[in-house]
Structure formats: C-alpha cells, structure tokens
Image 1 (spheres, one colour):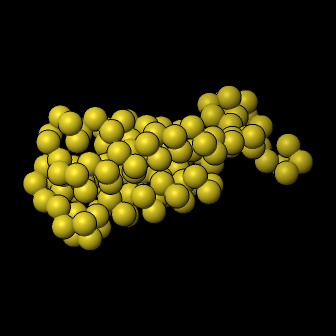
Image 2 (cartoon, rainbow, N blue to C red):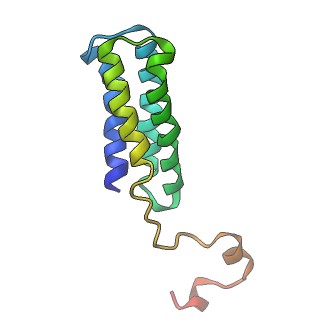
Length: 120
C-alpha cells in the first residue's frame, strides 16, 4: 500500500513539475501524459483485487528514463525525469503483497454453493 501511495504522489508531482520547474515542450507533454496515468493506476492498484495494475508504473518509469535523450530535454527536466522514472520503475516491484484471497472467480460461481452453505 505504501508503494502505491508513493507512486500516486509521484504521478501528481509529474503533473505539477512542468510548472514548478518551468520547463515546456516535449518534457511538459510527457509529464502531463504520464502523470495522470501513474496517479490513476496507483490509486486503483491500492485495492488488493486490482494490485496487478501496479505494473503500469514500470513502463511509465522506463519511458521517463528513456525520454530525456530521445526527446532532448533540458537539464532540469532530464534530472526530474530520471529521478522520477527510476523511482517508479523500482516501486513497481514493491508492495505486491496479495497474500489475502480476493474473490473466487468462476469456480466460486459455478460451484453452486451459497454463502450460508459456506458458513460465512
């Protein structure tokens, strides 16, 4: 859960960074596209049933690492992209958890058991 919260904060920072760091162009467009994707997927991935969505931050982080040399960012935007990208890529591997069982899938539906038969 803590990793998802940190990713959500990084996504919010990406949306604010072009204004705060005063950079525009391709760096701003990239941050304004990646930021909401990271923020939204991180908030949704906080729920155990949707925890696999945490992997969205891996390609987002890798893009942020690759974009500065590909798109020719300035020094401030490059530093921001590299730091946030590395953090997002690393956090994709953190906090997978999933020790609790969520749902039951089709097996639970097709078994024909009701909750009263399960004793729950």
